Image (cartoon, rainbow, N blue to C red; front, side, top):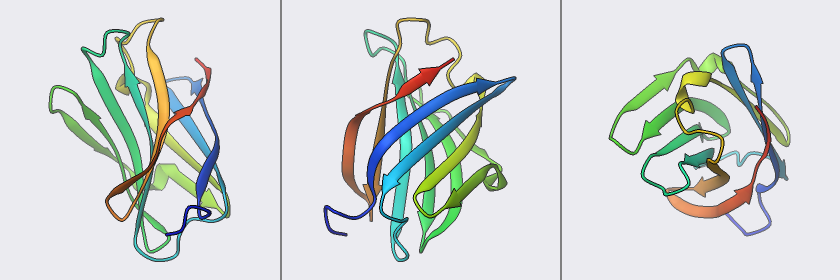
Length: 128
C-alpha cells in the first residue's frame, strides 16, 4: 500500500442512544486486496485504562468489528453494523465500550495495512 492510499482525513464519533457511531473518511478507497483496519484508541488521561475499537477489512470487505481493552478483554460485534461506501466507513459500537473513561479522556484514530501501523494519533471530533 502506498502512502497515498486510504489515508484517514477525518474521523468523528457521536452518541446515538446506547450506540457509539464512528465515522472514518479516507482519502481514496478501502484497499481491494489485503488487510486494512481503521479504529479508535480511547484512554484515561493517565493512560491507565485503554481501549481499542476497530473495524477490519479483508480484500475490501468488512470482516470484523471489535473492542479490545487494556485489561485483555476482547469483544466482537455484529459486522452488519459496519457500512462502507467508497471513501466513508461507519461502524456502530455499544456505548459501553467507552464508558468509565470520564470527561478528560483521550481519543485518537489509527489505521493499519497488512498488519503494519499506517497512521496513528489522528484527531477525532467528538459529539458525546
